Image (cartoon, rainbow, N blue to C red; front, side):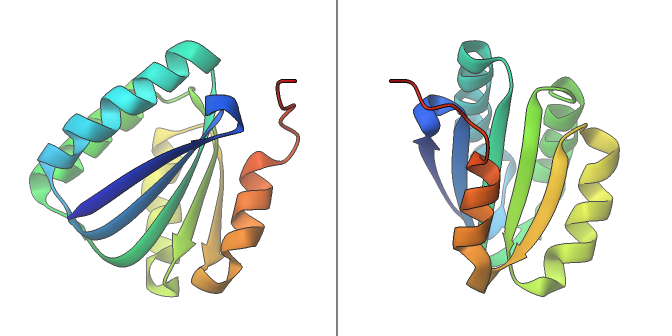
Length: 125
């Protein structure tokens, strides 16, 4: 599994790139980053780009559910970018665990997803 993070808009947005199969250990890197940004920003926005993504191991799925329940109201917008095969599943899976506005973008629409995730954020001067 490969997980890469990039902070944007002064830490208000987190761009996450996933490839392979997400394992429980991947959350040991992801969760502290997200929690630090939430502590600094209050609410954040997350863009998840999935390339050659194969889903979660059972342990990772449990970590994901625990994370989602803990941070139910902390994520303001959530964008997924990837293969259309994940679209319906991600929307159904994520909806009960977050108040975030969720949108799915095809891989060819990454720039649109980035614009949407940053829309209306006032950049610090």
